[in-house]
Length: 211
Image (cartoon, rainbow, N blue to C red; front, top):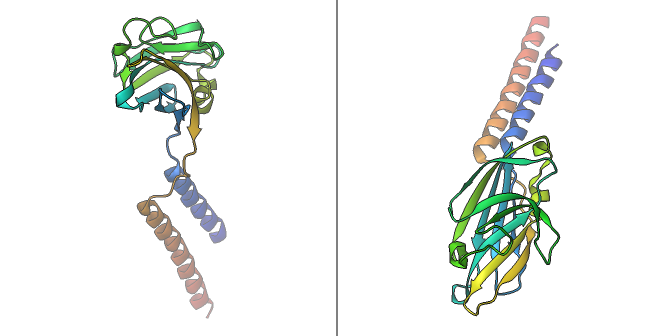
């Protein structure tokens, strides 16, 4: 009976340890390293909340603005709410031309297409960031993953000082495995030590009783 209790206690402690080391999934990466457009990007999906953060890392001396981000959501996914830290951006769904890349089904843009219509100055300037938060709905919402969304993304730059533009895909940056916090390790260690001490105490009591 005691061995069963010990096994159960260790199981609970191990489960708590694994849960404590689980971190929020996030996929991060950078735009193609060609010039003039450079950027970093992160994609996080928690339940049905998709968060995309774009940072324009192009040299300030070159100017340039991120004006559009095209990507794919799983089929039958709808967007029920959209929030952004840059009010010049809006979101649309449908068949989006992201030439020279394949068509996408979702677009965040300063205009109604991948070009990002209007003045490019309304986009994300060099050295600046914007975060987009999308609430996903529909029968396909649960089929989305950070990596699938990330790997379908195409970024549009406009308004460089030489009047050029740039179109980039993004490349994933490997993320390190989560490391348990010291407090978590301490709690796990003391928990196991406590279980072991209780077992030793029980064995000693049974030995004394038998004697």
